[in-house]
Image (cartoon, rainbow, N blue to C red):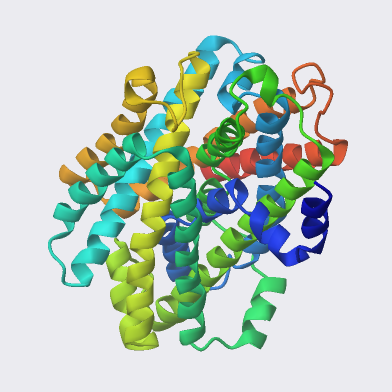
Length: 424
């Protein structure tokens, strides 16, 4: 025992921090899915550098929101849906779950369409074929693979985001000019600009991430042998600190990639007069003559990698929301026969996305409206989340700090204000 403690003390600190990366990293990375990439590309194409500042503004907001959701799972022993049900009428909690399901299905449709177009651009076959192939494969993997395997490959797929950082550098940005635009941005002017801001907020601080973050905490604890709610209650100080590092890293990576995608679209599309794009294919094709073949390939391959990461997250968050709201047995480690309703929602989310693509719904229009729906839904979920995390009884004597509650409250107010401004 003494020897093992000595070895543990000698373990390099950087290895410890790498070891704690998990739910926070994959949740943050899932935020930059193909639909998010397309949203940021649309914004960069239409408005140039005008919204680059938003990447810096949303990082601390997103980090605090995601850590608050993680805390719910870590100390209450239950997921976000179950916690919200204790503070909301069941009918309202159910309505939130259905709204999340609808937004996620649209998001999945956009993600599958982006992945299909990516495979088509690589000359590997028709896009719709891959919509079905990827959709069915991810549905099967979600049902058949144990949580530990899913968590492991989601963690490695997060590396796909590096493609968008490299792509931005290949476009040869003038950093002095970019810094000026970040520090002195124009205020959004007109309904379309406010809608773009709501879409950014809705894509970055998205309700599906709230449910997924808390749900992953439960999965992690089950994997560690804590099968009952009572066993999962409360978290040590070191566990909270480790998760803060994890969430901080994941949300930083998410917002950094958002910055570079908007920048890439600004430098390659907006700067050359291409301000209107309909698909991720349009964005990639316009990128090639300006930034070169390598940038085109990185952008395209990245779409597939991020889609493989995001779709299980989207489908899983909807399944968590329903299972926790209606008290179903759930978990990605459960056998299908033991959690049929949970897996039915997971499969239905992906199936809904496939159907939307097959009937010809515009991917870019769908994803932008999905982001807007999320932007309007998020303040409601955040308000309920605040009611949960200040409840000492529900949080087992470990409620969120006042400053954390303050930041989450500010986030809810900003998202609500941006939504109102969009319609005014």
